[in-house]
Amino acid sequence: MRTVYRNRLPQLDGAQLLTDSGLETTLLFLESIDLPCFASYPLLESASGREVLRAYFERHLAIAADHEVGFLLEAPTWRASRDWGAELGHTPADLARFNTAAIELLADIRKDSALSPVVISGNIGPRGDGYTPDLVMTAEEAEAYHAEQIGWFSETEADMVSAFTITTVNEGVGIIRAAAAAGMPCVVSYTTETDGRLPDGTPLGEAIERTDMMTAGAAAYFMVNCAHPDHFRSALEADAAWLGRVWGVRANASRLSHAELDAATDLDSGNPAELGHDYARLARMLPNLRVFGGCCGTDHRHVEAMADCCCRQPAA
Image 1 (spheres, rainbow, N blue to C red):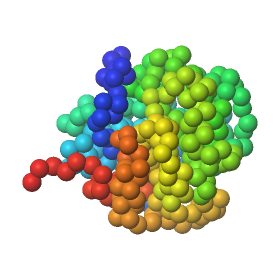
Image 2: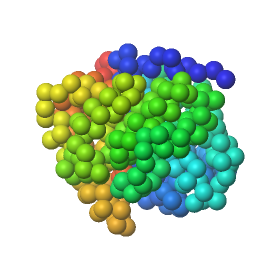
Image 3: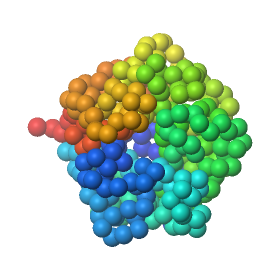
Image 4: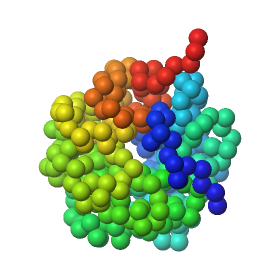
């Protein structure tokens, strides 16, 4: 087993990286693929499912190639942890196999690509719901729970682990501690409501500061995801040191709240060009913003607009 960037992430050296968009909403709404529990990892079970995932990622890699920037491949494993796997009838042994297969697929995609750098991340989701803090855990409980999935990733070619749609500081802290114990660089991405606060009411800046304090700054960096820029931009309007800890954004296409999105039966894909300009504005507010991608409702069109507005352009 050989890792490429685990000991030196290129984004921390200043490389701009695109990443993908709203995988699950793309598969569900645009490709009409059923996703029980909003889980994409079962697609790894079949050759046809793996081809769907490969085609999805390669659409995004082509955009990075056009803009001469790197790419961050996120494994389709957001739901591939013990509690969510049990909902789908999968044992821990099944989940170990799925998580390993996900990284193997991404490693194959990286090997076949002429793009550089291409970083591989093991993707982790919350133990509970991604929109509400419905499962209260201590940091120690979160560490014990997430250590299992992180341990699987540590035995693969994954360069890092990224935890998305995290709703509480304790869960973020537990994930970072588990990753540190496994020797994996770790990113935690908090989600916010329309008021720029985490779903449990914690202001975004306070959440990042507390997480750093409780982990001695062990996270490689932080991100924000699953919220429209309008929802958290006001939280960034301050001359605060924690802004320098936010290196990536994966925003929603829609301005709907989490509750409204949860109840929606149609996809709100917003305006890709407008979202690209929103990212350019965020880049002026976040001095270290290096990772650009999307979340719910976004697809490759949105990522292309982000790249047009924020990434270096090839020479004419």
